[in-house]
Image (tube, rainbow, N blue to C red; front, side):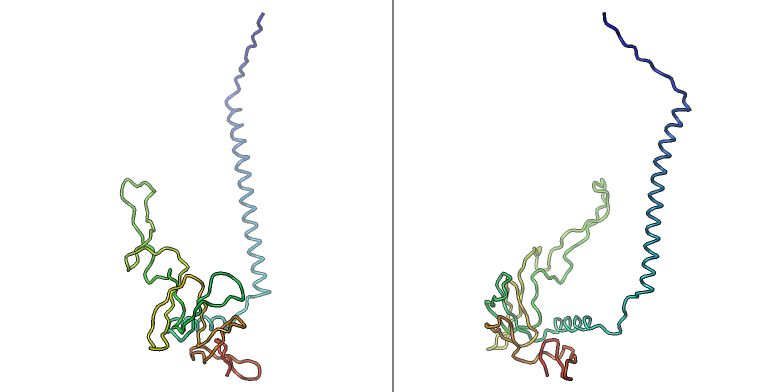
Length: 220
């Protein structure tokens, strides 16, 4: 004999159901409010702490910055194209590596990725139907020579022919080491040494004994 269990349904008053839903919602809102208050308290305390640190340990202030002066000198040397010497180094990080070539040069080496014009352009995309939400898109822009420049480790150096004095461009895929002065490579020390005075574009600084030294390393 099969005994069938009958399901019993209880009709709860509507007010009880509504109060239960409100209670759950209130609990959620209460939790969110507490989190927001905790965040605001943390921000307020951190702001007060920063004010105390700025008052008791204020950041330094300088009337002159040597690192700023050095960067100004370097940028001016790059822009004016002062005499330099470029050494074409092989790939690798060995301290005893010697260059595979060198040349008297002008200014600093120029990475092949450097560009005169903006490499990007903005395209308006407001036509209907707007599939991507509308707005503007930034895409690559063609270079003046008619190609799109890709990534490369190549570098251009403006070398000087010591026989004729004419300038020619040399391209190198490896690292290029440049000294902003006439120099040559010391194969014993595996480093460049100056053979002439650095350009007067660099600022002189005082050293011990009252003599001066240029940023390029030439004492006088």
